Image (cartoon, rainbow, N blue to C red; front, side, top):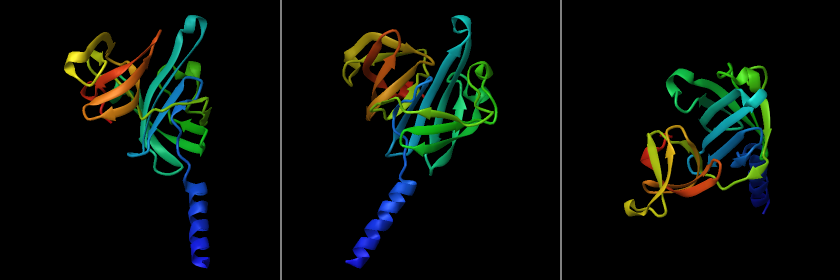
Length: 195
């Protein structure tokens, strides 16, 4: 009995100390994050503006593998991965709070939000059932009502559009695009960035 209690207590302490994970959802101030528990991949997108008529922008994509409480992330503008990549870090404070720190600013960010001065804290505003956040890497990616070539819809996405993936099945991803209106449907995974 004593051994069982010791084992349970050890498991509980380990979960409290190391079991923190990122919760998928909207973290406010322009940050959306998705966590895939099967692969431990974290993907996300930051987009915020400031100034008259939102003349200054800070936009970057986020990808990394959650290995512990603090881990490395790669950030870059979706259409410029090679030239714009900055490796930073993400820290999980608790299940509702993360911090992002970059060693340098992405273009325009110094006018909007400073990630290089000190870690920026984000707090979960709305939990969402997201598996991944990805972007389109072809000129035109159509939505489909079902996972079938003959179920193509008129709605489509263009290169660089960000989508929120709720589930994947084989060669397909069921996702949502949040534009002037929300569009949901199946998209071909081959037309999205590789993770």
